[in-house]
Amino acid sequence: MPAPGSNKRVKGISIHRPFVYGSVARPIDPAKRPANLPAEHTHQWTVWVKGVDDDDISYWLRKVQFKLHETYANPLRLCDAPPFEVTETGWGEFEIQIKLHFVPESGEKPQTLWHPLKLHPYGPDAEIEREERRPIISQNYEEVVFNEPVDAFYDILTGGGDKGKGGASGKGGSKQSAGRKGEASGRTAEVPRNKSAGNPYSEATEGEELDRMKIAIKKVEEMVKVEREKLTGREKVLEELRKTEGTIIKKK
Ligand code: SLL
Image (cartoon, rainbow, N blue to C red; front, side, top):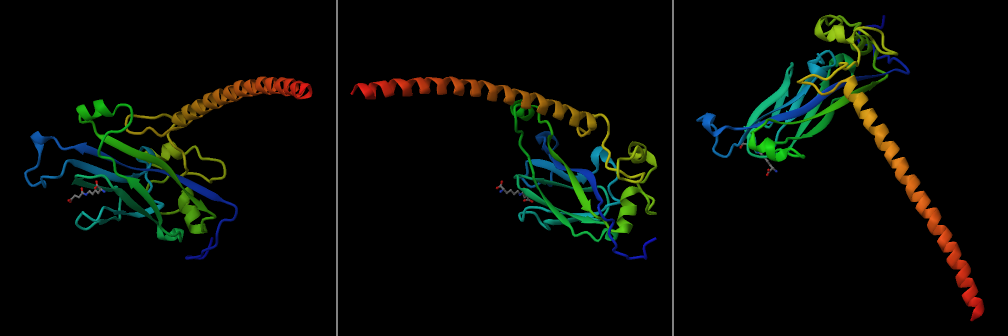
Protein backbone atom coordinates (compact mmCIF):
# COMPACT_ATOMS: atom_id res chain seq x y z
CA MET A 1 0.00 0.00 0.00
CA PRO A 2 1.42 3.39 -0.87
CA ALA A 3 1.70 5.87 1.98
CA PRO A 4 -1.15 8.38 2.00
CA GLY A 5 -0.33 11.27 -0.29
CA SER A 6 2.34 9.24 -2.04
CA ASN A 7 2.93 10.39 -5.54
CA LYS A 8 4.59 7.21 -6.77
CA ARG A 9 3.48 6.62 -10.34
CA VAL A 10 2.36 3.35 -11.91
CA LYS A 11 5.09 2.92 -14.51
CA GLY A 12 4.33 1.97 -18.07
CA ILE A 13 0.57 2.36 -17.63
CA SER A 14 -1.64 4.73 -19.49
CA ILE A 15 -5.34 4.87 -18.66
CA HIS A 16 -7.91 6.64 -20.75
CA ARG A 17 -11.45 7.66 -19.88
CA PRO A 18 -14.06 8.58 -22.49
CA PHE A 19 -16.48 11.46 -22.11
CA VAL A 20 -18.74 13.66 -24.19
CA TYR A 21 -18.89 17.44 -24.33
CA GLY A 22 -21.26 19.57 -26.33
CA SER A 23 -24.38 21.62 -26.43
CA VAL A 24 -28.03 21.61 -27.35
CA ALA A 25 -29.85 24.78 -28.40
CA ARG A 26 -33.56 25.30 -28.85
CA PRO A 27 -35.09 28.29 -30.63
CA ILE A 28 -37.47 30.07 -28.28
CA ASP A 29 -41.07 29.51 -29.27
CA PRO A 30 -42.69 33.00 -29.52
CA ALA A 31 -45.93 31.49 -28.14
CA LYS A 32 -44.17 30.34 -24.96
CA ARG A 33 -41.72 33.19 -24.58
CA PRO A 34 -41.07 33.97 -20.89
CA ALA A 35 -42.08 37.58 -20.14
CA ASN A 36 -38.78 38.43 -18.44
CA LEU A 37 -36.59 37.24 -21.32
CA PRO A 38 -34.53 40.04 -22.93
CA ALA A 39 -36.00 40.87 -26.35
CA GLU A 40 -32.82 39.98 -28.23
CA HIS A 41 -32.55 36.45 -26.81
CA THR A 42 -33.52 33.94 -29.49
CA HIS A 43 -32.40 30.60 -28.03
CA GLN A 44 -32.12 28.58 -24.87
CA TRP A 45 -29.07 26.36 -24.73
CA THR A 46 -27.25 23.93 -22.46
CA VAL A 47 -23.56 23.08 -22.58
CA TRP A 48 -22.32 19.94 -20.83
CA VAL A 49 -19.56 17.51 -20.01
CA LYS A 50 -20.82 14.03 -19.23
CA GLY A 51 -20.01 10.35 -19.46
CA VAL A 52 -20.79 8.34 -22.56
CA ASP A 53 -24.41 7.20 -22.17
CA ASP A 54 -24.49 9.20 -18.93
CA ASP A 55 -21.91 7.00 -17.24
CA ASP A 56 -20.55 8.34 -13.97
CA ILE A 57 -17.33 10.29 -14.52
CA SER A 58 -17.24 12.04 -11.14
CA TYR A 59 -14.74 9.52 -9.76
CA TRP A 60 -12.07 11.11 -11.99
CA LEU A 61 -13.59 14.51 -12.85
CA ARG A 62 -13.96 16.69 -9.77
CA LYS A 63 -15.36 19.91 -11.24
CA VAL A 64 -15.85 21.76 -14.50
CA GLN A 65 -15.56 25.47 -15.15
CA PHE A 66 -17.37 26.88 -18.16
CA LYS A 67 -16.27 30.28 -19.41
CA LEU A 68 -18.99 32.00 -21.44
CA HIS A 69 -18.75 35.02 -23.71
CA GLU A 70 -18.06 38.27 -21.86
CA THR A 71 -21.48 39.60 -22.88
CA TYR A 72 -22.87 37.33 -20.15
CA ALA A 73 -23.12 38.48 -16.59
CA ASN A 74 -20.71 36.35 -14.51
CA PRO A 75 -19.23 34.49 -17.49
CA LEU A 76 -17.33 32.05 -15.25
CA ARG A 77 -19.64 29.23 -14.21
CA LEU A 78 -18.33 26.52 -11.92
CA CYS A 79 -20.02 23.13 -11.55
CA ASP A 80 -18.53 21.33 -8.59
CA ALA A 81 -20.79 18.30 -8.82
CA PRO A 82 -22.60 16.51 -11.64
CA PRO A 83 -24.41 17.31 -13.77
CA PHE A 84 -21.57 19.35 -15.22
CA GLU A 85 -23.71 21.67 -17.32
CA VAL A 86 -24.87 25.24 -17.74
CA THR A 87 -28.19 26.36 -19.20
CA GLU A 88 -28.59 29.90 -20.53
CA THR A 89 -30.48 31.95 -23.06
CA GLY A 90 -28.89 34.23 -25.62
CA TRP A 91 -28.67 35.51 -29.16
CA GLY A 92 -25.27 34.54 -30.51
CA GLU A 93 -22.82 31.72 -31.05
CA PHE A 94 -19.41 31.78 -29.41
CA GLU A 95 -16.60 29.54 -28.18
CA ILE A 96 -17.13 28.18 -24.69
CA GLN A 97 -14.02 27.44 -22.70
CA ILE A 98 -14.36 24.24 -20.69
CA LYS A 99 -11.83 23.59 -17.97
CA LEU A 100 -11.71 20.08 -16.52
CA HIS A 101 -10.47 19.78 -12.94
CA PHE A 102 -9.56 16.25 -11.94
CA VAL A 103 -10.02 14.72 -8.49
CA PRO A 104 -7.32 15.90 -6.06
CA GLU A 105 -5.95 12.37 -5.61
CA SER A 106 -4.89 12.46 -9.27
CA GLY A 107 -2.33 15.21 -8.84
CA GLU A 108 -3.17 16.10 -12.47
CA LYS A 109 -3.28 19.67 -13.75
CA PRO A 110 -6.57 20.93 -15.19
CA GLN A 111 -7.14 20.55 -18.93
CA THR A 112 -8.92 23.00 -21.20
CA LEU A 113 -11.26 22.31 -24.12
CA TRP A 114 -13.11 24.68 -26.40
CA HIS A 115 -16.62 24.08 -27.64
CA PRO A 116 -18.19 26.22 -30.36
CA LEU A 117 -21.78 26.79 -29.25
CA LYS A 118 -24.16 26.15 -32.15
CA LEU A 119 -27.52 27.87 -32.24
CA HIS A 120 -28.30 27.50 -35.92
CA PRO A 121 -28.81 24.33 -37.94
CA TYR A 122 -25.94 23.23 -40.16
CA GLY A 123 -25.28 20.36 -42.54
CA PRO A 124 -27.48 18.75 -45.18
CA ASP A 125 -30.73 18.84 -43.13
CA ALA A 126 -30.35 22.46 -42.00
CA GLU A 127 -33.43 23.74 -43.83
CA ILE A 128 -35.89 21.21 -42.43
CA GLU A 129 -34.34 21.48 -38.97
CA ARG A 130 -34.91 25.23 -39.05
CA GLU A 131 -38.51 24.87 -40.23
CA GLU A 132 -39.33 22.30 -37.56
CA ARG A 133 -37.45 24.18 -34.81
CA ARG A 134 -35.52 21.04 -33.97
CA PRO A 135 -32.98 21.16 -31.15
CA ILE A 136 -29.47 21.81 -32.48
CA ILE A 137 -27.08 19.32 -30.97
CA SER A 138 -23.34 19.73 -31.37
CA GLN A 139 -21.27 17.28 -29.39
CA ASN A 140 -17.95 15.47 -29.43
CA TYR A 141 -16.60 12.23 -28.07
CA GLU A 142 -13.27 12.72 -26.34
CA GLU A 143 -10.87 10.70 -24.23
CA VAL A 144 -8.67 11.96 -21.46
CA VAL A 145 -5.42 10.03 -21.08
CA PHE A 146 -3.72 9.66 -17.74
CA ASN A 147 -0.14 8.60 -18.32
CA GLU A 148 1.48 6.77 -15.44
CA PRO A 149 -1.13 7.84 -12.87
CA VAL A 150 -0.10 8.00 -9.22
CA ASP A 151 -0.94 4.87 -7.20
CA ALA A 152 -3.96 6.31 -5.40
CA PHE A 153 -5.46 7.63 -8.63
CA TYR A 154 -4.79 4.33 -10.41
CA ASP A 155 -6.84 2.60 -7.69
CA ILE A 156 -9.67 5.09 -8.13
CA LEU A 157 -9.60 4.80 -11.91
CA THR A 158 -9.73 1.04 -11.91
CA GLY A 159 -12.31 0.67 -9.15
CA GLY A 160 -9.96 -0.15 -6.31
CA GLY A 161 -10.68 3.12 -4.52
CA ASP A 162 -13.08 3.51 -1.64
CA LYS A 163 -15.04 6.50 -2.90
CA GLY A 164 -18.03 4.24 -3.33
CA LYS A 165 -19.67 6.08 -6.21
CA GLY A 166 -20.16 4.83 -9.71
CA GLY A 167 -17.94 1.86 -9.21
CA ALA A 168 -18.59 -1.70 -10.17
CA SER A 169 -22.21 -1.52 -9.14
CA GLY A 170 -25.30 -0.05 -10.74
CA LYS A 171 -25.81 0.95 -14.36
CA GLY A 172 -22.24 1.94 -15.13
CA GLY A 173 -20.85 -1.04 -13.27
CA SER A 174 -22.63 -3.75 -15.21
CA LYS A 175 -21.53 -2.16 -18.46
CA GLN A 176 -17.99 -1.72 -17.24
CA SER A 177 -17.53 -5.01 -15.47
CA ALA A 178 -16.13 -6.79 -18.53
CA GLY A 179 -12.77 -5.08 -18.03
CA ARG A 180 -10.15 -4.22 -20.59
CA LYS A 181 -6.65 -5.45 -21.13
CA GLY A 182 -4.19 -3.83 -18.75
CA GLU A 183 -6.87 -2.62 -16.37
CA ALA A 184 -7.63 -4.38 -13.12
CA SER A 185 -11.42 -4.58 -12.75
CA GLY A 186 -14.51 -2.50 -12.08
CA ARG A 187 -14.13 0.92 -13.64
CA THR A 188 -12.93 0.82 -17.22
CA ALA A 189 -13.06 2.83 -20.42
CA GLU A 190 -15.79 0.68 -21.98
CA VAL A 191 -18.44 2.32 -24.10
CA PRO A 192 -21.85 0.66 -24.69
CA ARG A 193 -22.03 -2.07 -27.30
CA ASN A 194 -24.87 -0.38 -29.19
CA LYS A 195 -25.99 3.18 -29.71
CA SER A 196 -29.29 4.37 -28.24
CA ALA A 197 -31.64 7.33 -28.68
CA GLY A 198 -29.64 9.61 -26.41
CA ASN A 199 -26.17 8.27 -27.14
CA PRO A 200 -24.54 7.80 -30.55
CA TYR A 201 -21.18 6.66 -29.15
CA SER A 202 -20.80 2.88 -28.99
CA GLU A 203 -18.69 -0.06 -30.15
CA ALA A 204 -21.19 -0.51 -33.00
CA THR A 205 -20.73 3.13 -34.11
CA GLU A 206 -16.96 2.65 -34.01
CA GLY A 207 -17.35 -0.52 -36.09
CA GLU A 208 -19.48 1.31 -38.66
CA GLU A 209 -16.88 4.07 -38.86
CA LEU A 210 -14.11 1.51 -39.39
CA ASP A 211 -16.17 -0.15 -42.15
CA ARG A 212 -16.66 3.26 -43.82
CA MET A 213 -12.93 3.89 -43.61
CA LYS A 214 -12.12 0.46 -45.11
CA ILE A 215 -14.46 1.18 -48.04
CA ALA A 216 -12.95 4.64 -48.48
CA ILE A 217 -9.39 3.25 -48.41
CA LYS A 218 -10.34 0.66 -51.05
CA LYS A 219 -11.84 3.38 -53.22
CA VAL A 220 -8.74 5.55 -52.91
CA GLU A 221 -6.53 2.56 -53.78
CA GLU A 222 -8.62 1.92 -56.91
CA MET A 223 -8.38 5.58 -57.89
CA VAL A 224 -4.61 5.49 -57.41
CA LYS A 225 -4.46 2.36 -59.63
CA VAL A 226 -6.44 4.07 -62.41
CA GLU A 227 -4.22 7.17 -62.23
CA ARG A 228 -1.06 4.99 -62.26
CA GLU A 229 -2.29 3.24 -65.41
CA LYS A 230 -2.99 6.62 -67.03
CA LEU A 231 0.48 7.76 -66.08
CA THR A 232 2.10 4.64 -67.53
CA GLY A 233 0.14 5.22 -70.79
CA ARG A 234 1.24 8.84 -70.95
CA GLU A 235 4.84 7.93 -70.23
CA LYS A 236 4.71 5.53 -73.20
CA VAL A 237 3.36 8.30 -75.46
CA LEU A 238 6.05 10.63 -74.19
CA GLU A 239 8.69 8.03 -74.90
CA GLU A 240 7.32 7.65 -78.45
CA LEU A 241 7.31 11.42 -78.90
CA ARG A 242 10.89 11.63 -77.71
CA LYS A 243 11.88 9.04 -80.30
CA THR A 244 9.97 10.86 -83.04
CA GLU A 245 11.38 14.19 -82.03
CA GLY A 246 14.83 12.65 -82.06
CA THR A 247 14.23 11.56 -85.67
CA ILE A 248 13.03 15.02 -86.66
CA ILE A 249 16.08 16.66 -85.13
CA LYS A 250 18.31 14.27 -87.08
CA LYS A 251 16.49 15.23 -90.28
CA LYS A 252 17.26 18.90 -89.65
C1 SLL B 1 -21.58 37.08 -32.19
N1 SLL B 1 -19.24 36.77 -31.69
O1 SLL B 1 -21.47 38.27 -32.44
C2 SLL B 1 -20.53 36.43 -31.29
C3 SLL B 1 -20.77 36.81 -29.87
C4 SLL B 1 -22.25 36.56 -27.94
C5 SLL B 1 -23.55 36.05 -27.50
C6 SLL B 1 -21.99 36.20 -29.39
C7 SLL B 1 -25.36 37.30 -24.49
C8 SLL B 1 -26.67 37.16 -23.90
C9 SLL B 1 -26.93 38.25 -22.89
C10 SLL B 1 -25.17 36.50 -25.77
O2 SLL B 1 -26.02 35.80 -26.30
N2 SLL B 1 -23.94 36.63 -26.27
O3 SLL B 1 -27.02 39.38 -23.32
O4 SLL B 1 -27.02 37.92 -21.72
O5 SLL B 1 -22.46 36.37 -32.68
